[in-house]
Amino acid sequence: MSLATNPPVLSQKPADVRFSRTALFLIGSLLLLAVATVCSLKFGVRSISTADVLQALQGHADTTDQAAALKRIPRTVLGFLIGAALSVAGTTMQAVTRNPLADPGIFGVLSGASLAVVIGITYFSLSNATLTMAVAVLGSALAAAFVYSVGSLGRGGATPLKLALAGAATTAALSSLVSAVLLPRIDVMDKFRFWQIGGIGGAEWDRMTLALPFLLIGFGLCLFLAPGLNALALGDDVATSLGENVLRTRILSSLGAVILCGVATALAGPIAFVGLVVPHITRLIVGTDHRVLIPCSALAGAILIVFADTFGRVITRPSEIAVGIIMPLLGAPLFIWIIHRQKTREL
Image (cartoon, rainbow, N blue to C red):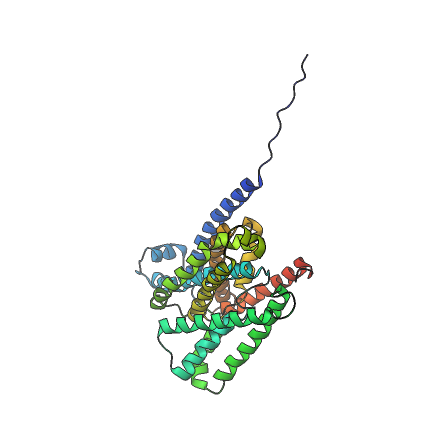
């Protein structure tokens, strides 16, 4: 008499688990994107019915509420662009430096763009939108190069701790320089003090149209080099042995991140912590494959900025709190959590 045996239970492969998580993340993100859009158009100084919001999304402006919702669409679109740009930049910078604390705000990149724009406006009467974006990108690149150079000095090269300290010191110095340039010039300071805080209230279709090609170039560079970023995570020696050109990957991906940071800062001012918060949350869900992580981070960042902006408009109605103030309130606790999670031994 033969003994019947139960068939072996096949365990789900890790790749299948990651795929299901990614699929769920994408579905959830698209739903949240739709909710964020409706909330952004619906809530503010004036609350608008959902029916009027849906009519405004179809281009109708037959009533006062529909016209008001229609005017909020550029602000919502700008929030999506800024959130996606800063999130992808942060994800890329963390991969390039292999530093979990890498963020455009912490590394001085946003402050570099701000200082370059303020100097251009104050001393050179910079007003052209395209030139403003180019100057912001240049300022971001110089700040990033300076921080990496300083962080590379001494034994061990560019360690996460040295890069974080160099970035924090550079951010403080550049922010002080921005104030030093603006304070003696009341006319310039009045014009740009709200821009310094960081917000998406001044959205304009013309500026976004000019910025879109630059944002696409930056995003395309980061996404195209995603396989190389995966190789960098294994270490320079292993990446080289796998046939990856480490120097080229670092330079081009950093260029993509700098373009995204510079253009985002030119459009909305410096908004910190987005590039720190979003990559960590997204990485916990979809994993570390940058081919998936980069587009998922873009979606999550877009959602976060629009929700944060809507929250800032509702909490102190009829006035509003700029998203550049809301994000540090969210990002600072997470920054502490990240340091605690790393147990400081990896820093």
